[in-house]
Length: 129
Image 1 (tube, rainbow, N blue to C red):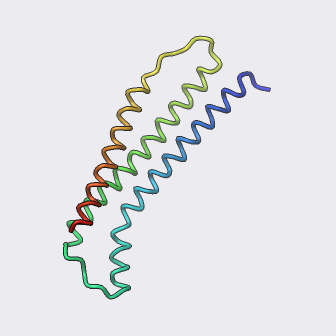
Image 2: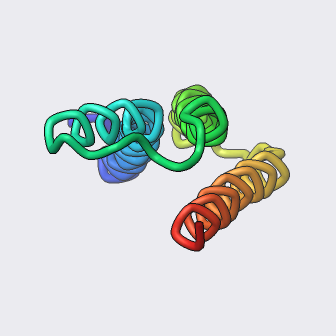
Image 3: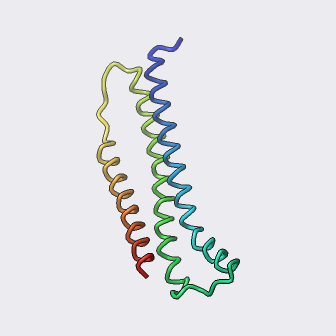
């Protein structure tokens, strides 16, 4: 059996959790990208008149927010892979290396919070109109 097997298994589980979260963010971004298209098809299927606002003014906001979630998910996958490899190497070494992931995690968290706030503002404005 491999030495430090439990530590390596925990590292792999953490890596897979990051990947799952990243895929979820990317799927949510894709959903936002295509949601206005779905609403247009639904409106046509129900023989409803077009929205009062031009679709061209509605789509860029959801597309930008969706693209933000897609991009953040892709960045998270890269960070997860980097973190996994670094920690896998550190598990078997006796000395502890200093990492700068705290700054990267803070920036990523701020970007995710910003994208969520933008989405909330967009939805609030859309409901109000």
